[in-house]
Length: 183
Image 1 (tube, rainbow, N blue to C red):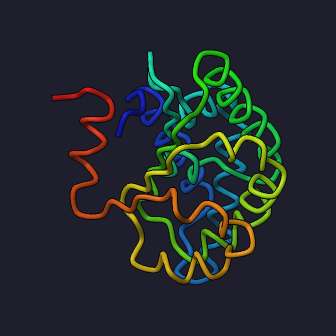
Image 2 (tube, rainbow, N blue to C red):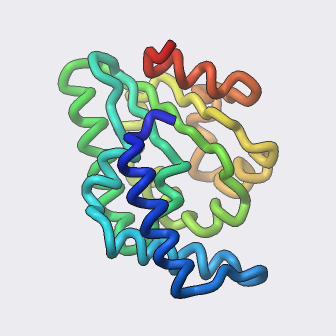
């Protein structure tokens, strides 16, 4: 949702190209997902991918983070660029607003994804307390059923913001459409 269709089409072509050269694994899928993400980030415009993943909703204090797009290209080589972009988005909002909201689409997020991106998640959370103090709200769309397990895994990093979190499950698509003013 809320991702330019041409980006998705380009990613799908890159994925098809990757899987033409590398047959899909039934086992050891985690490593292959990372290899495919590396392939995509090396064969596409990484800046364009990142700018489509983390966006400011125009004329608001809201940032939208699209995990569905992120997971298709994210790898350790691009973590710093993702982080820098996110911080720039927060700083841009704070130039015009005293606080911000963080909206995250976590559709398909899993424990293995949490482990795969653990370094990015924890370093982002631990090094930005000043910004998180200015965060009014976190809305998690498509809240995973295993959110309690994820919260326990990340508890030391998220304990101070748990009271700001709103979990959205069943009505996620509709709420995202409303967020983006899509009727």
